[in-house]
Amino acid sequence: MAYNETLAEKVRNLLQGSQGLSEKQMFGGLAFMLNGNMACGVVGEELMVRVGPDNYQDALAERYTRPMDYTGRPLKGMVYVEEDAVEQDLDEWVNRGVEFAGSLPPK
Image 1 (cartoon, rainbow, N blue to C red):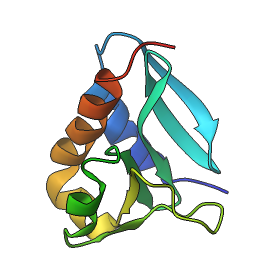
Image 2 (image 1 turned 60 degrees about the horizontal axis):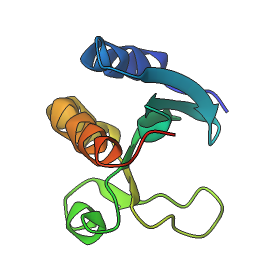
Image 3 (image 1 turned 90 degrees about the vertical axis):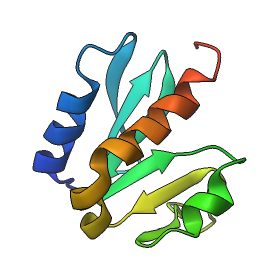
Image 4 (image 1 turned 60 degrees about the vertical axis):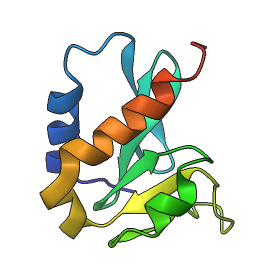
């Protein structure tokens, strides 16, 4: 599956200079990893963000989000953010993913 290269480049620019940053093909898109832990990524036209189980319900209550259901079962702690919200709040969503990934021990 192809992913939005323009969105991936915007995320890449936001994360530039982050310690332990790497990229990995995952979920049919591109994932951005911090110290081996996924923070966020791009699948199709949407941003995927790892918000963690404690922030999951709050993230789902926001407009333009839905559960990440790559396998047909929602992955608790991960959400898709639709393109409309990404255009408005990309920094905020990427920071949420970075914050959660940064709370985990390095792999």
